[in-house]
Each structure stands twice: as C-alpha cells, then as structure tokens.
Image (cartoon, rainbow, N blue to C red; front, side, top):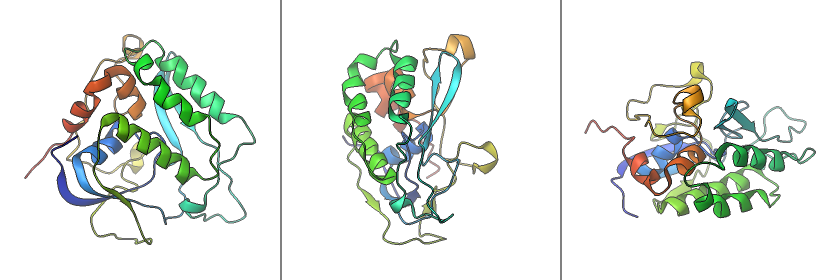
Length: 218
C-alpha cells in the first residue's frame, strides 16, 4: 500500500506490539532502521505494551532471562518461560478487546503469535511487527542496524518513545489520534496505547489514522 512517506532516516528500538507513536513512524517514514545491537534497557517498550481493559490501562511485560551480565545485547536476550506469560498476555488481550468492533476480524492473525515459543525477544518482536505491517498493508523498507552507534546518522527514537513520561522526548511530528475505545465510557479516552488498541477498535481505518498522526513542517 502506498503512503505519503518521509525520506528522513530514523532509528527505532525493537518493540512488543509497539504503541501508536511507534507505528506512526513505521507508516510515515521509508528509511527505517531497527536497533539490534544495543544493550537491553529495562522498563521500556522493548518488552512491554499497554492496552485498555475493563479495569483501566494495563501493562503487559514479557519476562526475559537476565543472565550473569547486567548488559545484555538485545539480539541475544532470551525469553523466560518459567511462567506461562504468553497465555496470561493473550487472555488479557482477549478480555480487553473481544467486544471491540474488529476483534473477530483480526483475532486469527494475532492469536497464533502466542502459540509459538521463540527463544529470543528480537525474534518474537520481529514476528509481531511483520504480522501487523502485513495487516496494515505497509511495505516500507525496514532494515536492522549493523552495529551500535551512540549518536546515529538520522533521527534517534530508540529511547524517545517510552512508557515513562520523564523519559519521553518531544516529538513535534506526532499528533496522537483520538478514536472510539471500548472502555472510554468508564475511563475517558486513553491515548497512545498499543497498536492492538487502534487495530481492534478501528479496523481497516488504522492505516489511514496512522498516516494522519504525522505533522509535517516541510
């Protein structure tokens, strides 16, 4: 699917069902690199996503094996299956969105992701990203970094898109969209959740909405 893409090079971290801001970048830029050589950063969207359920915003965090070293390269970070978190995460997603307008439309694409047991976080996130982009019919070229560069050539979003407000960096090109949410009548509208929230609530309009989140100053 063709989009009105920006040519600026950007660099993103890997993400577990990245939020709307994250997917805004994947849709609106055509020169994208995913960082695969950095050291793992805790409490980030690399292994965490946020959805909206009957009890409000819910963070789903993937357990990972810490190993002996504090610094673990993201491309070597293994998933921890000592607890059945895959079942817990899927049941939480199912409970949150089974009454949404487009749940039945997309469940057969999303549920199988939780049937496998990949060894590495990066492998798991890549499967998710590929699935979501296929659903959105987005074919922008996305590459992986070949080495870690502290100050990369391009716009660095690796830590700018972050669940903690104090860690977030100003993103003048992003406009958080407002749309119908299943539990908005209880909690009001909750912005910038997982791409799953937008997908299950808005369906085929998701790509168009993501394209509209980019504010250009050119």
